[in-house]
Length: 293
Ligand SMILES: Nc1ncnc2c1ncn2[C@@H]1O[C@H](COP(=O)(O)OP(=O)(O)O)[C@@H](O)[C@H]1O
Ligand SMILES: [Mg+2]
Image 1 (cartoon, helix red, strand yellow):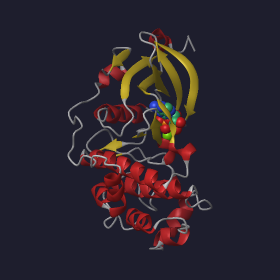
Image 2 (cartoon, helix red, strand yellow):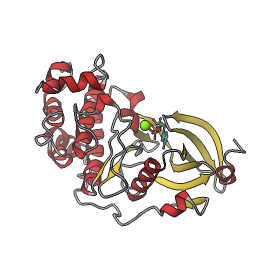
Image 3 (cartoon, protein in one colour):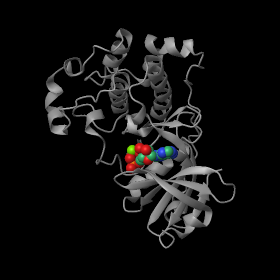
Image 4 (cartoon, protein in one colour):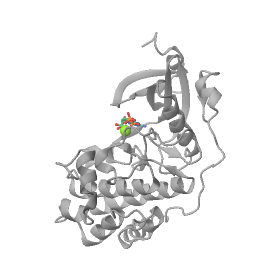
């Protein structure tokens, strides 16, 4: 590792692997100068466009309360390390959640999606494995590897994505994030995997003609009535009728919970720094490391 990552190891000690993905490996690291712990997502620089999009979007959203915070970018020959806030784990290992907890997660993620969508961004990979839980107990959206912003780069990258969380026949749009959050909500409440036996994209797209797809395929017996109403709004096959993030936040099942816990209503105005941008030259050439604060 010393030979591969001299610049990373100059500033951080790598302690253990905490996640593996198709294009990356995630380590827990300790910053040498102050002993603080962070997560480090190490990507090979093969897919430069994908990586650049991920970094630009994380940088723009780094003050969003519902997004895992970008801390620094470190480059080594052929690799780029994304140093970010360390979280305790993902939602995946905590399922099923209680009704209140699930509603709070939806409120938090919908707030972040609302701000992303207002900036022309789509996350494109919302699922329990990409929603982290921080040591502060807060949920944070992570993994912007498939995210895309209108007017940036060459357009959405047409690979990857998890078929189970995609609306049939649709890809890479804001409305897909809402569908994916609907499927995530189903899994949060039931602990069951949606479409368990129907996981190939082919099967899912064949099912497109069934207007009441989620009604047929999901087991609603343990889902509270209001939550089911919200989910059916999120899982509407007609993307024009599907709820928006703002409408999710206005739904009675969500309002009930934000009021009960006296949570501030998720922000409706866009507060992220739209102009903040990652300097491409700093990532792909130039300096070896780039602190973000
Ligand atoms: N900031 C973090 N804190 C703790 N664990 C993380 C963090 N970021 C990622 N992970 C872990 O690593 C896994 C893969 O990270 P992710 O960004 O989703 O990469 P991929 O694009 O390969 O799916 C996650 O599912 C999670 O288990
Ligand atoms: Mg992931």
